[in-house]
Image (cartoon, rainbow, N blue to C red; front, side, top):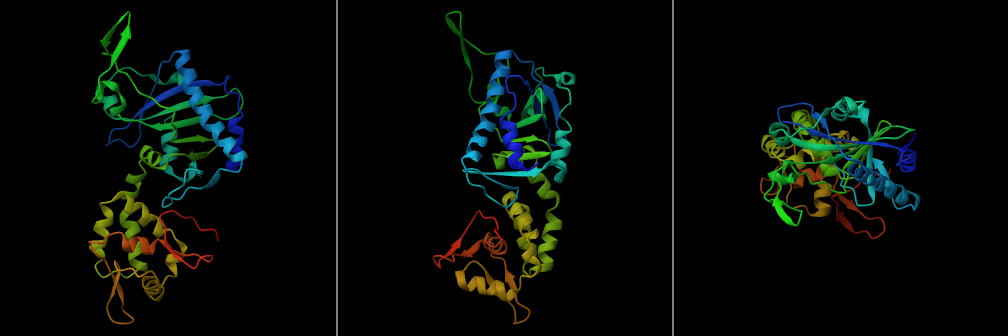
Length: 320
């Protein structure tokens, strides 16, 4: 089933007849997988979470029916616009599969959340679990941090009851109407890319493959001071994401220094220098202009067939 079909089917499930659960996930820095506890909720609170999940999916379906929604495969180096939703198959990324495996098949078997300083200190995300009477389970993810627990933020709460205000001594969690991503039928739909990447530790995965990615670049692109270039990338998460995107591009296998020099000349890229004798030319990394080589290799410089103007872009997908 296509992502479009899945999205349409999700919007039309029996929402009122669906069972709603909410799970809190705590993930210490040293842990590979989260610890998951279930919220013991009243019916009105469960209904509120049901409304959030329903409204998000039905809004997407409405946009899709109107032709205003663009669905496209997930691309680590792509910056989607507000009308674009990326999707990926869960089996394609181990971090997704392993985290979703931590969600109990039967929420009734999950440990019930009780205030615990260690658990709360590493609160990482929460999941709204929707189990419809017919159809597949839906998991709605939202990033969370201890700063959004009132008792641990810079704010303090005052509760009005019986004619007067009093301080709040019990943990008070702040939720909102936003969803970062949701999973169903083997697919993940990404609504808020940055928080999606934080939830599933995408940047930690980038660090893990940084050396492998850099080596792939080194074999294809001659950079005179490569070690300095590599160190600049290793210490910057967005650069690692862009680097991984570059290493996956098919054109990297055939790009030549002649093509690179033409692009530098056409776009007057002052931040990229070519050094060395003819036939042995190399790019020179400029520490004062650290993004220029990355943008050049990620094909950020385009020309318009309609206007004949040249552009630098920060978000694109190939169309053929």
